[in-house]
Image (tube, rainbow, N blue to C red):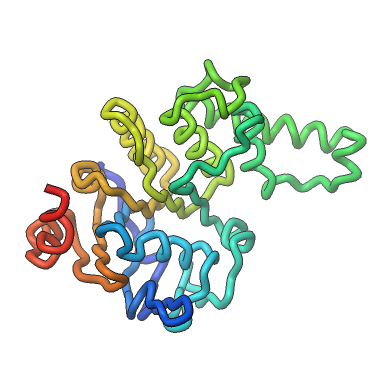
Length: 262
C-alpha cells in the first residue's frame, strides 16, 4: 500500500544468495531486490530462512554463494559495524536493549556512530565535545517526540511493558539515521492496540524520514496492509515475490503458509 510517496530505484540487490551451516542449507539460490522508500516484507513459515536473510543483509552472515549490491556497490565480506556505517539499521526478534539504562540513554547509544570527539575529549568534556553531545541529544529528543515516549524518557527500559520496549528499540535504530531499516518481527508478542501503534510508526518512519524498510512479520493482516512488495520464503527457498495482492493469490504461498495460519 503506497501512501503517496515516490518509490525510487533499486538500492539493495541480492542475487542467487545461498547460505549453509555445515551441511544444513539455510538459504538456497535466493534473488530479490529492495527499492528506495518502499516497505518490503519477507514472510514465510517458521524455519523458512527469514532471519538468516536479514543477517546476510546486515553482515552477520556471509553467504557462500551470490552477490549483494548496495547503493550500486558490490559488497564483499562486510561486518555489522560497516553495515551500520553504510546506513543499515536493525531491530531484533528478542529485544536487545540495555535494560538497566533509561530510555534516553538507550537512544543515545544509537548515536555512537555519529559522535566525532575522541575518548579523551569526552573524558574532559571540553567545549566542542559538550556542543556535540547537546547536538546528539537534540536529535534523540526529536525521536522521543516522534515516537510519543516523552513520559518514559527517564525510565529504565527493563521496567517498561513489552510493547513500549519494542518502540524504544525502534527509536534506538532510528537514532543511527539509517537509510535502510531492517525490522525482525517488530510486532511479535504485541496486543492489537500495540500492533496498531507500531504499524503507524513504521508507516510514519517510511513517510516522514523517507527510510526504506525491510521487515519480517508473521501477522499477515499487517503485512498486507503496510507492504509495497512481499517476498515469500519456504524451507530456505523463494516461492513468490510481488505485491501483497499477487502474493495473496499465489497457490504455492497458500499451501505453504496461509493454509497453516488459517
